[in-house]
Length: 248
Ligand code: MG
Ligand code: MG
Picture (cartoon, rainbow, N blue to C red):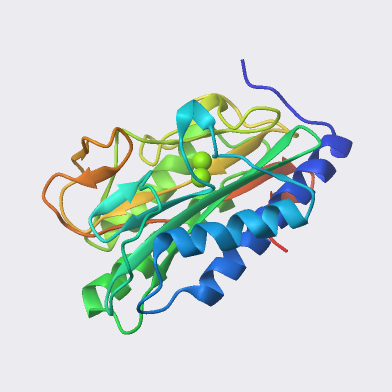
């Protein structure tokens, strides 16, 4: 069942989103050659707790950290650790915060120093695919209009969209109905209604869309070791169109 949120609930979710966005901004400001991903994790956790919120991922199904940090061919769910960023890396940072029982969820892929032209194109196409998907977050559109828009942009740029991991409804739980795939047929799926809140999160690979998990039980990588990028926002369907909640 797809829950809808009242305007008052969406206001609380804006606060969860603002704190999530602030943590991601602070992490982005700290991204540079030589920084370890666990140092970035500490920055995010401190930011979220200072705001009076709770890191949403820490302890979620046993996940050990505030951030998911996924480098290069890592797609999602990488665990922060001692690995230091190198010139030319791309780093996906996924972050969530809970305040007053509501969740925010957002991700950005950062460039570390100067990155290869193909990596730059991948980041730009993935960000553009998120924009296209969010633009469909309107009353009267259908759920798979979002995925079709994401897929059109990503594949139009010569990349592929991950099939095994998808976006999701979000509210008092991080993952609510519906699943929001990054592919699909326009004009199909449930009708979008006012008050629905969705986390839209294209995961786009430079090579094939196949992925698999590593033995740490969390990290997902591209099966052909090609680069992967990930951008995410939490978005509400409102009378004024799509409202991005994960912004400062
Ligand atoms: Mg996320
Ligand atoms: Mg998410």
